[in-house]
Each structure stands twice: as structure tokens, then as C-alpha cells.
Image (tube, rainbow, N blue to C red; front, side, top):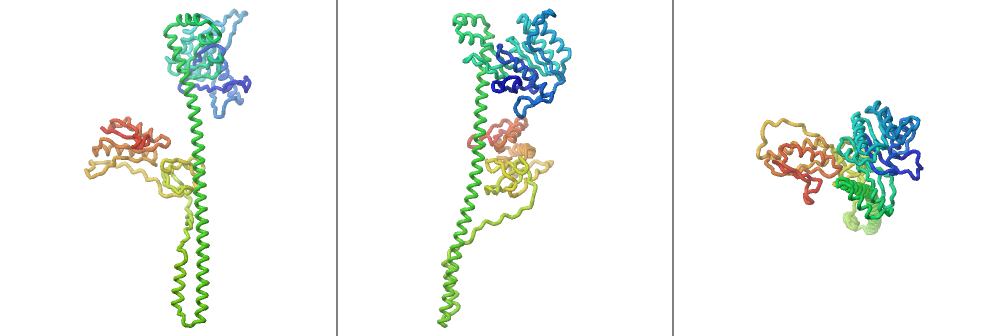
Length: 479
């Protein structure tokens, strides 16, 4: 989201999320950091969206619709009405509290300012508690350090701050959700030339608790910044991997196409040689027949033998033309069907349909998108066996495998098979078994892990070692 009134080349975009895990955000930190601009950005964009206007935000952004948008922003001192800064704020807040409900958006700027800090902080927390109980969406800014702890002690409340660059002594205007703000007064004063002994004495006046909180916030800021950098790097690596994957697919297709063309050319050359050799043999036979006419003593069987010898001299070559693809009837593919990927000549299993005529196909450890026209049906997915009521314990001759392979199975069917397999393994007296679920998207692996955590017969479970299949296999210790 971008503030609609700031120059497009200067405005800093921020993600503002409200209403999921938390419905109240408290932004702390020093002045000139961008707290009020963030507050106004949310209010203005909400009103613009509800008025049918385009909003300056990225594609895919979502805006909520509210019954009321309440705001207490700015200094409204009035000589005519004999209202101080604090009084004017209280008049607004009283009016808001009378009408606020769960369908309201409430914006508080410098909540509790203009009076004694201790009383102002206590009032601010009490007002926030009252509004938060109505389930309204709240965004509030404050200077009070006491409200940094407020976000940690209340469910549905999140701390936030606006980033400040100590090196340049300037704000970056980046909103940091989850990290409370610091005043940075000591660092700023030091860079501006305030003597160290004055700063040292000032620090000694601060309580140990305050210093610990400040250190904690600094650590949180660094961790969040490092996490964002790592996320950006990971995203870059993912995009590069996708690019390489597509290039590899294209190269495989080109290689197969080139191989088919070379085979076709080789077959054509060989066919031409055979044709030339056959013609030469026929010419020789024709000459032999001519000689026979001249020499009556030649016998037919001698001509036949001569022809056979000539045929034996011809290179024995059978055209290995690729058999024409049988015209398969149009059929509806289903997840789990075994198919042949014609472009690669490999067998695979259908996972899910991704578009109008494209499927995700598992070929060994490789998963790729393939068009439906490049797929040839081999066999359907096995129908899930109906549960049977077992009335007797299986005999000692009944064999239970030490491994259960779930690759290619549907999610619900796979979990049903796991439960039955664990019961069979316990009856067989196995102390340990392996469940092969593959890596894939991770959905099946998570489902298996969740089932094992609550199963009555499972003592413990872990992913396989490097030699056991890694995270594609779960090793289960049975009770």
C-alpha cells in the first residue's frame, strides 16, 4: 500500500495486514518515522476502496469494507472552546467509544498524549482494551514505552514500528510488524556529537529492565531484517531453479527430437543401400539368364542358388521404423493413473490437473507439467479396497512387508492404508517399519506425520537417514 498523496517516486510501499491472527496493531517509536503516514494510508485507502476508487496498491491486494471508519489524528487545540490537546483528543475518543462496533475501523494517533506520561499510558491501554473487546479493527500509534509490553500481553494484539537507520540518522519509512519501536535517542545524540560522558550518565539513569527491552528490540530488528534478506535470496534461487528446470525440459525434448531425426536419416541411408544392392543383384541375375540362353547347359536351380548367394551378400537390415502411435480413444485421465510421457518415453503417475489440458506428472523423483496430448494411458489407479471386518487374527503364514510404499496414492486412501498397515505390523510383532511417502509437495508427508503422532501403536517416528531415503521416508518405532 502507498499513501495516495505522496509523490510516486518518493513514497515507500508497506504491507498492512489486520484481522487475521490479530485485530489490533500498536505502532511505537520516535517522531518523524512515518507512524502517522501509515495510519493515514490505511484510512484513506479504505475510504477510497469503499467509494469505488482505484487504490495505489499491488495487484492481488484486498481491502475490507467497514460500517464506520473512526479517526483521532492530529492536534486539535481550540482557544474558542477552551480545549487543550489532551481534552480535544478525549472528546474525539469519547465519541468513538459511543459508536464503535465489530464492523468499525478505528485509527488512534498518539493515544494518551498531552498529559502525564504514566497516566497517559494507563489511559491508552484501558481505551485499547475497551475497543479491542468490541472486535473492531484498530491501528494506534504512541510514544509510550509501556505499550510495547501491551502487545505481548494481549491476545489478538501485535506490536509494530517504523524502521530507523542509525547510520544515516534518517527513517526508512518501512513498517516492521511484530517488532516494537525504539527511541534511538542515545545513538542519534552520539552521532550528532553529544559527549560520551553525558550519554553514559544518561544510560546509567535508565532502569535495567528498560535496557534489556531495548536490547531485545534491537535483536528483533536485526533478526527480521536478516530473515527478509534470506527470504529474498531464497525467492531468487527458487526462480533460478524453475528457469533451469524449464531449460532442462526443453533440452530433453530437443534431444529426443534430434535422436528421432538421426535414426530416421540412418534408416533412410540404410534403406537406400539395400535398394542399390538389390538392384545390382537383379542385374546380375538378368545377365545370368542371358548367359543361360546362350548356354543351354545352365540349369534353373543353379540360377536360384546364384540368386540366394547374392541375397546373402546384401546387408541384412530391417527397417526399424517407429511403429505408428496407435490412435487412442479420447479418455478422461484421473489422478493416480499410470501413463507414458511420449516426449520422454518414460512411465509416470498423474498427480493433479493444473489447467485445461495440463497435468502434474511424477516421473521417478522428478515432477513436471505435461500436456494431455503428450500422455498415453497405461492403466488406471488401483481402486481403494473396501474395509473388511476382520473376525480372526491372521495366521503366522500371513506376510507383512517391512515397508509401505504410498507414492502415487491419493491422500485419503494413503492415510487409510497407513492405519491398516500399522495394525498388521503390530500383529506381526515388528518393532520397526518404514513408510515411503516421497517428498513431492509435502502434503502427504505432513498427513502421515500427523497421523503417527496420535496413533495408539506408535512409540516414536523420524525421517530416514541419507541411506534410508531421507525426508521421503518415515521410520516408525512401534510399541
